[in-house]
Length: 324
Image 1 (cartoon, rainbow, N blue to C red):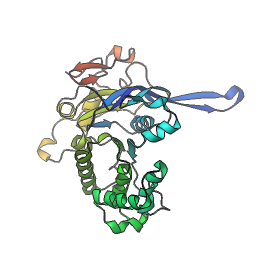
Image 2 (cartoon, rainbow, N blue to C red; image 1 turned 45 degrees about the horizontal axis):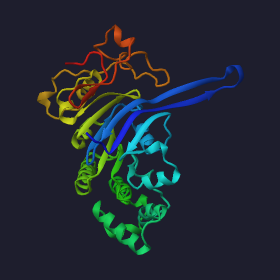
Image 3 (cartoon, rainbow, N blue to C red; image 1 turned 60 degrees about the vertical axis):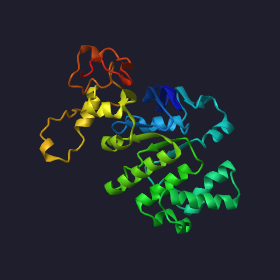
């Protein structure tokens, strides 16, 4: 299968120096460690995991908002990490991001018109009249009224602000959008509206999404495939229906077990709840990083790191003893 975006062994280690002289120490935080996946044209890949697992950092690395320690990212055949500043600026037309907080991601000093005009100014695209026409079209696409162009971010609700952020991400007609927890700060009813909007835009423009979230019920609604991340590493990747119906990694099984069940008749099913805390990424456990919390661990799990392998067609896992 050919991918629009290919990520190979993506790694980011943050190095922090503390103290001085004989008291000096170096602490390395392994935020992302050898992550690999691909995203096809018009596909949505959901990236899920607990807070602090490195999923948002992975999204920032792909866009080079952070510089990677190692690995490779290829977009439509181009090696993203080898591009100079000018080439990277042009590539950003095709790769955009929607941030988690729709208030913090919008400049409070600019009106909606100024926020949506900014991408065209940076890329030196269109005349002033053409920009006005495109901005009004963008507002219509995301379900906002044309008179909103003169308002400031604080005059809108959270859902409306996220629609503005989506319009800004669409402004340059990208091919890939990284959506970093785009609905986690919104009410449940508004979440559904934004998810439906994202799907409608994907159908209309053939967009590819990397949808980052800790909410597995949201990811199920929008994703074609799902990648599960734990402590900087991928532990499972599979088509959405197969992963939700039959998780193979114990961590994935525990995450799915924790999803709230609205039907009270099904709540008696036993849950595989995790015990213990997530280890520190500055001092990850040896072997399988999940073995300290895994109910199925054996001696090899704490000694040897499991390899990332294709266990079934289009299903990848890093586990010595998959649940099947």
